[in-house]
Image: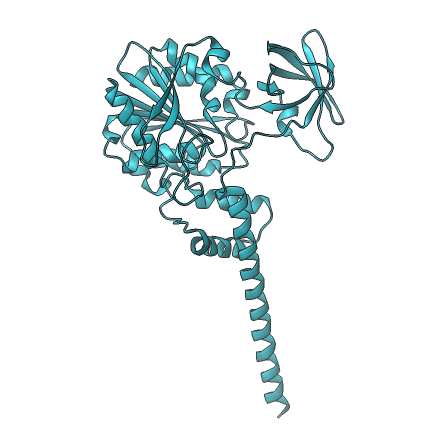
Length: 381
């Protein structure tokens, strides 16, 4: 009798434990699906806060303080960053010294000047906010008819039939591409730097969320159609982060893909599921809870994880690709780029930049980056 009672007790204990584990996994999955919605899917067009304070200005240096509760790792990295208060603009160079929350860096004023006490923020683009202020390049603000309504773009003309279409990443904007527009102008290539759905001045997506390429590619198609209607014969696609996934999706889905002669992908999001896995790992979320969160997200938000795996279709890309990725990227796993390059070694030229974070390869290695860029565009154009 005692053995029977013990057996029942063990069985009930095991069932109770399994039930508790399932509750933890499902509860954690529901919670982290909400985190995924907030940090990944939800549209974010707000600029970074002006959270840095100018505390000193030298002949060619500037000292800034960051709040003790803020970790702006880029502030302490010797690389090219912009610094702005929304009106004035300067460019940071190498770190001169760092002590506590104070960092002194090489500094070059570009527009206006800062005063001690000014609240400022770092700017990844490293240039004032349009082609004319950045380089003195004349440009046209154009409206492109797209499926959900007009999208805006900068167009810089050239005396050629090759057009480059530049596509920014999630929660970013056209300014990401400023660093390359003068090179395209020197190469005599048209540049069309586009907005797409969910941008500040563009229509909202039908889902109300970022779709990570499954819908945004239609806006790239509209831009390609605009270029073709304006005399383009060859298209070069340039995509950053989520923008890399968007141009990949265009290349895989559009009837106009045969007009593309090359792609440049900077830290491209080729598999959104793997990117979510990396983010969960960074937060020390257990694998079973991450899995549950992805399943629940499919039900709550309609995410089709298979459709967002562009890496699985790497063998369908039949044009030259320049693939750039920093090996310190903590957002998009560099492994997905390595796998893409390995899957199509005859078409994909991958270059890894040591110590560079997410879409920060140009900031740390501008000369090498632009050399690769100009050689590639010059070859495919």
